[in-house]
View (tube, one colour):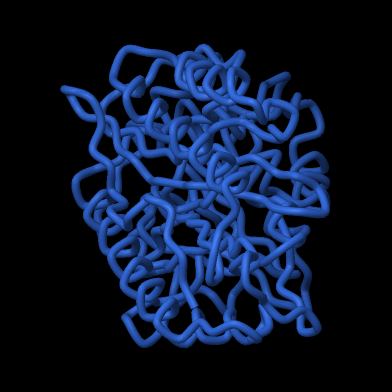
Length: 368
């Protein structure tokens, strides 16, 4: 298996870091093409700005780790011996990091005990949060990554349509969730992007609701479904909101306000604009509607190996959008105790604008 550390070396140089330390996760997978479970046995790769990288690997993972074709020294350890000596040996193999150096960590991923082991092995080092720096190497998606995202989305949309054909008044949210899960795997999902949100009636007004056993959907309810299939590690993230049997004029206007904001976001998003500008355009549509008080969140987030990653599509984020960036556009309005509507699409920035990867219809749909 071939991999390149060039993006890491570029990030180290740009941010004046002497080294970075990786643990299993999305950054690890993007870099090495393989992932491992985070568990009680630490697996850490240290990449210095100068010299060869080193890896600290549990012995039971050595066969799998060998498939990476790691170009550096590997220090394995067994349960009965503990991992501390492996960290010490790794530090001894990196004399360039013995003095006062700055080592970047994945602060949103690495656990405390791994950082403590590194601190003991490199007692003079300064450790800093380099999560955003490390993750920046994943901002621009390759053609292969975009193809995998498209496949995850294709599976998701087919599963959603099949689920809607089975939805009936009187079902519980949990019953609908079970149908959705069955359909996702029936249509080819490797796994789930996240536990799906299936929320009806007043529950739809909770942006991150959990499906209920004891609520039966009834005529006039909103039914919000936020979900995604995972395929070869890449995640879809789609939300659509439907109405059961009928919809009031008030709720129709409520829905149409969200739809207008969604459409505006896709009109504004393109290479060269900032994440702030996209969110600002979306929020202005909602603010100028009669439902401004029911806004709750930013417009969207990056999407790929993680369901939530950079870039964050929100006001104050001045990051400039570039071709290959993938993110969601998901405005929503939420009347607590009554009704919530969210419409979420996944888009990729192109040279000439954006390509909307999601194609599931957005116009208000009455089901059941």
